Structure formats: C-alpha cells, structure tokens
Image (cartoon, rainbow, N blue to C red; front, side, top):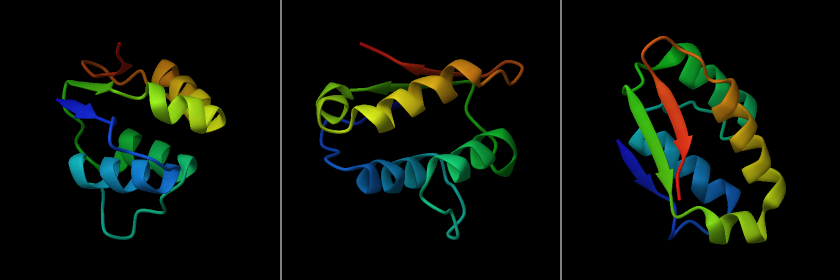
Length: 86
C-alpha cells in the first residue's frame, strides 16, 4: 500500500489520513503514541506501507517526521514493513 502525503499540510491532517487509509478505529487518538498502538496491535497492517510525498510536511513539521521515521525504523512486525520512501 502506498500513502501519498503530498497534500497533507499539518500533523492533524497526517493522522487523519493515516487513520482513514490504515483503517484505524474511530476512537484513534491522533498522536504518535496512538499511532504506535494502532500499527502494533489494533489493526491488521498491510505487508508493506510506503509513505511518499512527505518532504513538504518534513520542512514544516520536522519533529513529527522525525518521530514517524523513528517509529518506522522500530516497526518490526514479522512480514510487515513501514517505509518513508523517496
């Protein structure tokens, strides 16, 4: 699965997009702790999630993209990967 973040302008929009595309529950908290909980146990993740078009968001919100990069690196579910591409 590829998720294009190019039209995402804020961390709140990023979390809303991730919630929609990865089918997080309606009560998803919209923060990085909630994201980690969702991808490691709340939902069945695709075998590969590629996040593309994140560069503009990184320029405006470098702290959030740094956290996302760290979580992607720590995500070690068997047969699954989370990648910030391109």
